[in-house]
Amino acid sequence: MDRFDNQNVNLEALRKKAYNLRWAEVEEGTIPLTAADPDYPIAPEIRKAMADYIEDGYFSYTPKLGLKEFKKALVKAVKERKGEEISEEMVLPVDSAARAMAIIAEAFLKPGDEMLVFDPCDFLFREACVRAGGTAVPVPVALDTEKRKMDLSQIEKCITDKTKMIGLCNPHNPYGLTYTKEELDYLMQICEKHDLLIMNDEIWSDIIYPDSQYNSIYCLGNDRCQRVLSVFGFSKSFGLAGLRIGAIYCTDQEKFDKCVEASGVLSTQGGATSISQVAATAAMNEAYYWVDDFCRHIMNNRDFAVDYINRNIPKLKAYKPMATYLLYVDISELNMSGAQFVDYLRKNYQLAIVPGGHQFFGDQSEGHVRICIATSRQILEEGLRRLKAGVENLIKE
Image (cartoon, one colour):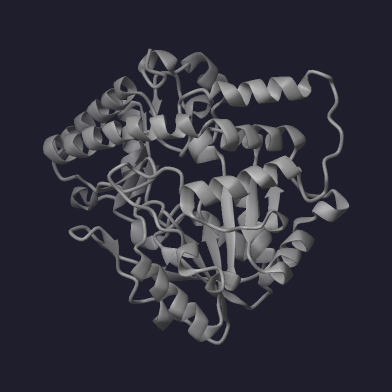
């Protein structure tokens, strides 16, 4: 039996446990193609590792800088999957990728400092900067749909003497794009010229479609990446969102030490739980086969959904992502805001999706919506049928 068929989506469990705009937070009968979280149970190897760990009944303190096994597994995983050369001594497990971003911002930004945040991009970059007391400066990065590239030409124009950091989401959410080596080199040259740090979010770097290619910024060499502070997580690829597990890593000892200080782990005020580190370690060591199978499944979902929307739903245009399991869909021809459209679908067609606009992705994403396809084909097809019906009725009205 295919582990990613409809029979393996346990809706009873999801309706009890899947929050953050998902099954547990929507009305009965509503299909939530919303937050980036798979509808499938985690790999059995991860469950077994967790069960084995709790067998003796002890949940003692972990090492303040994290379990050695976790660090070793991450170093091996990023080397084999992305070609990154990271030292175990430069890996810090923390409670989620979102928390990792906040720690980096707190470590290196002070009130009055500016951080360049791509617009559109995931709101957590902006949130991390603002919580640290900094000012998030939006940088418009328009999408070239023909070349499947972002326009990065506005970046340097937004730099001032207060700019200290650039946020890099690689792969990009919500566009679903990966960067070429030339684009990464261009970004790095700007940062070298103006002495800027890079908050490098690679949480989506395991979700690359088989017909696409991923380049990490570390392809430029560790010497040039001394200014890079990297974020990794296990929610998108392994379905571990509820375990709150992520990591910070870098190649500069002084910067790593600043992250450690800001994290609160030395005083036990921060850090990742033992069971979360055990789960993530098993994921990296034993469950990448699951991720690769999952990527093949969602590639089929991607191809079906993009074709269905572009062929069958008038006034909508879906972009084909290279990575992530998110579709970025242009609804501008409907002449209504993303929030209005999403509210209409939820109330009238029991379909929940995520609106573009300032709240989630920035002002430049207005006129778009984001659709998560990390579910079964059967659920996806029904969701798209509801999307089609909703748009057709809006046009009639």
